[in-house]
Amino acid sequence: MTNVSKIGIKVEGEEGLMQIITLKEGEHVKKVTQSNLQHMQDIQEAKDWINENGGAFMWSIYRKAVSMQANGTQLTQHDFARLLYLATYLTHERNGGKLVYDNGTPIDKKGLRTLLQLGDRAYRDFYNKLERESIIYDMGDHICINEDWFKKGKINANELNKRGLSFARTIIKPIRDLYEQYGNNRGAVGSLGLLYMALPYISFETNALVSNPTEENVNFIDRLNVVQVAELFGYHENKVTQALRKVKLNGEYVFGFMNVGNNKTVYVNPRIFWQAKRRPDKSLLLAFK
Image (cartoon, rainbow, N blue to C red; front, side, top):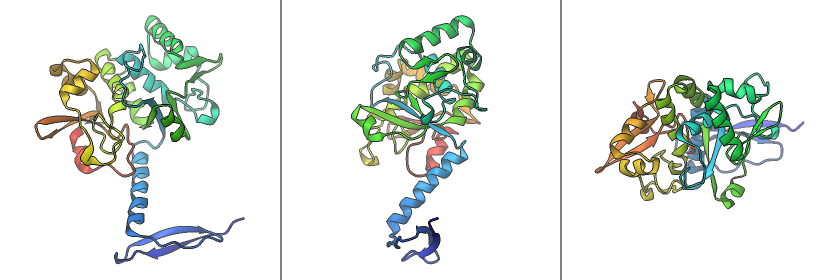
């Protein structure tokens, strides 16, 4: 068995600040700079943030900076809301994208309808769309989701990038809470669908809706204003704010707004999607109150 030991390293210039590093046998202590330590702390804070908001997450996969409609899908806003909820029952990637209940029992076609709380006709229409677009597969005793849409476990970022795909860390508990609260409300469930439709525009660094979501330098992020967001989602500019404000998560709005200069910028609540390798700023969280 490999011997491991933990040592404390005092960081130069920071009195009393200690970084604990685990060393395996044969490894040597490397110099820890303030920059390195900050990076490690940021990553840990990002993990803590995910844990505070439910812990388990999946990857929502989508085409880079291409709207869902432009992606060729025939799914509606309501369909996107149901699909996002359905994907929260995905198992780990090593199990081949199988849908299972929390107790591990596979979900079959009949169970799927009960889970989604849909009537016969609505369920049939929804299911047929997913099957026609190869989003789900009926394996008889269970249903599988196409891993080009959702995945749980490790992802190959380089491979996805080569195919023009991107991905967003999606926290499972908030998605379930939202659907279980609003799934039977036709108006509200449509607003939930906007969460998935917003994915191609969510800034990795700020959670604002932008035209260049992978830009890491906040000085070069091109924020979309409410009028542009309305056009993307197919709303009149006077109606889009109402649609985005229709649902709340534990007392917080799912979509928030901040005035930047003369423009109103739309943000997505980081308790649902969060990509940055740090904890969200407190000022960002205020946008959802």
